[in-house]
Image 1 (cartoon, rainbow, N blue to C red):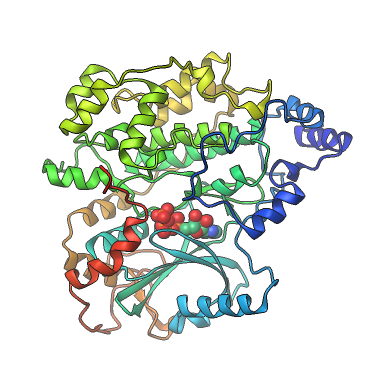
Image 2: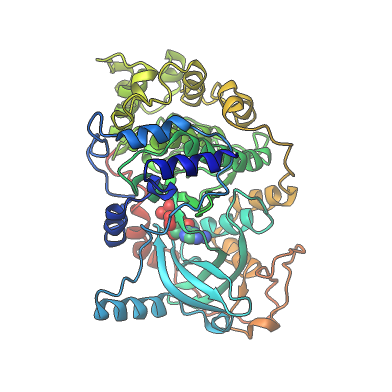
Length: 516
Ligand SMILES: Nc1ncnc2c1ncn2[C@@H]1O[C@H](COP(=O)(O)OP(=O)(O)OP(=O)(O)O)[C@@H](O)[C@H]1O
């Protein structure tokens, strides 16, 4: 009998369904009405269950701890996606009108029919759509005003250039790209395979914490996706649960590559202090931000992703953010409270006097052990890290203050904890070199060059869709890439100064720098 059959039998015996791990009926209803808000931080502990809240039924189920694949499971991940629930006709009508307004696809409308809005981030809005020729459900991410500022243009190009040649089971699949003429320059649309939810909603969609075998499966897929990217020196730099998309069968795919960067150490270093300050302050959402970014240290690389892996792993276990700061200063303080002071040589490298003083003067009041840091009341006796030397060593190595000492992806996959929990896999195919080359080109382009490149890389949807030639100037395979042979010269784009103000509000949503 396979583990899944065993588990299903156990579930039947205690009157639970496998989907109960993810959404109880009441919670599901609740989450449809008001999906968990990524940006709304509850007070610490608000996510925790009272001690002993696990029922005997659940305990029995957790006892089984199967450790094979997730792929036979039908995860109920639909519950918390924002949906048109039909309780209010007027609201439905408004939603439809908003969808039509947001997704004016011009000639591409013959190919894709938008169905409903399903997500929004600081830079993009995402809708579910149907590809008319195949009937496939797809997700379309619209990056509005993609050419308006260098930041937006670079973000969009990074995302396109990482994803266009990549084909990996744990990285979101880009099917097509096109652009339209928007009110502020170019709007870019990325067509991806539709996923049913993201990890944030899966973690918070149920009152119960995720069982260990599910956590391990998600961790494995995250590490595999990163192994592929890091081997090409590509750092994601914005890993967080809402950027990890999840399907009912338990597949996890890394998404949102707007901050991704080729972190090749041989690549040109930006020594300019202002540049460093700017870059480090705009990378990674606060609770997942590595110390080298918080301390504005001169270099950062793929190690920032490994720190985020630790934070995500902790969040899956604890059902709350591991270090939930809401401002840069608070994040530093909470990090010190959680993990203690960094070694003196790390403190000495901090160039900002105010930050160095804050870190230097910090006096730890409590002495938390790793066991305590990963203690989740709602798990009762089922603590995942407590007493497990391998697990403790694994998290310890992910949370190394010194980025150079932090465990890298190869060693993480070879770590005794991971080896024990995850089946060894044959080496995976390499990320094509051209991805790395394309990424590096984007970093040094001026605003004008970024706009030109966007026009060259992404075809216009103002021409009949089928007649646009495939292949970009560098011989791309993707149908969305095109040399701009259509000759359509767009009207001059508004000046940078004019546009910065318009997009500033949008950008500031995820760049909380003013407080520090
Ligand atoms: N392929 C997809 N299938 C299903 N949902 C998706 C897909 N891509 C994105 N989403 C949803 O849309 C949300 C926003 O997408 P995304 O994170 O790419 O936008 P963003 O503006 O770049 O976000 P951020 O604020 O993190 O920078 C995601 O959290 C996810 O819930």
